[in-house]
Length: 327
Length: 223
Image (cartoon, rainbow over all chains, first blue to last red; front, side, top):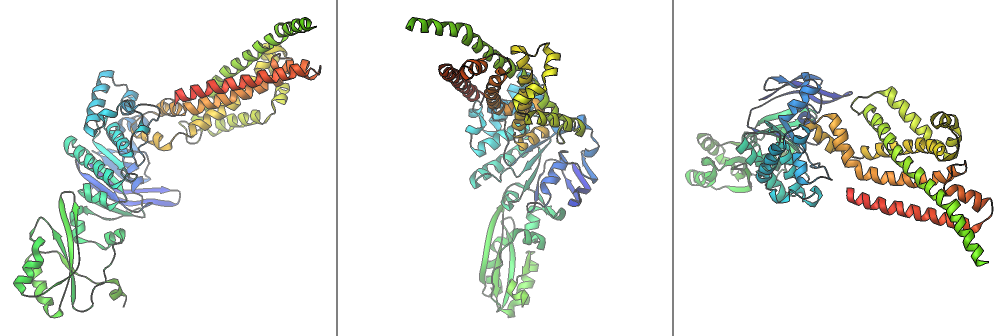
């Protein structure tokens, strides 16, 4: 378990992390999202001690990271591995040697190294490429090599710093799926830093939004999506739909896991009234489908619909377009 | 007449040019090897004591990098004269190949040290960070990662240095070091013998080409 309490970090006068409180449970896939410069990569680097924090506490399984001395820190890092945006490799060595390198530096014996390199190559799907040089591989394949290399020390935690940001969408999907597989098969906690919301939607169970070094919102991904806090909307920069000022506009949140999925047709039938669908969107979140509908209907039905939605435990809110708010 | 010329040429080749040729090769090889070894040591001192190094030490870094820069800013001929007392102290003489090799090594050490430092600083910072994130020690990062990654650049730097050393040996010839350069000066320039002049220049050109070809081959192998 990773427990972060009141974490502070400054570069000179610039505060990059301010009072961060975060708890990450074992086996979770946890997302840290925010714009560039929000401090998410710095926070990630505090977790494996690549960056020192100035105040507060960061404990992994009860061990305070900043109190580790040089040697202890090196040992500690065996348990906290990391992958990077540009998957840096030893360019002159083969894929095999690249994966084996951390183990060689730690003085593992040949058989152990050989066995583990081959197992991990199999796991990430690059068994055929072991004798090639990294630059002969595509970006996605290189990231797979980097993932295999990061797993050689059998870490409990895997830190991913924008690991898919340099890859195309299809490859990104494949790498994210690989991370989920690893999380499920090996039970490794994965912390994903990204600026892409799609990454969060694909793999993360929980997410924290950082802005200018401060924790803005935090929680399970599906809950956050359903509740749409203002801060999240600002980050996503979601476009506002121009809605008709005549009548009432509401946004209904949909999930494929409850009765909300056919709410419109039921409501229309049972209340005997008409709705106009202004906008609608469904997206995949890990294995769930979540989305929303924006409906417009006549003012006289306002109460009726409100009561109906409440009775059916639907998440909803009145929807206003920006132009209306400004007026 | 033609027999005389041939005999003269033969004599010239055996007595003057061949030994000069050997002397030049000797100087270039000794200087390159020792210059690379010392240069590497100096480079390691600079990298370790640099402010981002393993053991930052402003005093040592400042001193060593100052000395390196001073040596590099001397024209070789002046450096050679300047170092005469030191040369005498080390090898006991101030003329001949042995004496020439001392300033040659000093100059090559500074040059190669700088080349190695530059080559190693060019190594991807992300790679170094990644290696640290696996708990690999900083000494291993310097020797196993940075040095290994920078190897092709270091090789091509050493080749560059070798050509520069060859040029310097010709200058060292002016101070009685022997070698092709000294033949060019005494027989070609001072005796107005254009044939010798052209011949020595030709030999130097072939020499440089050979170094470049071998160097390129090694570089490709390394990469």
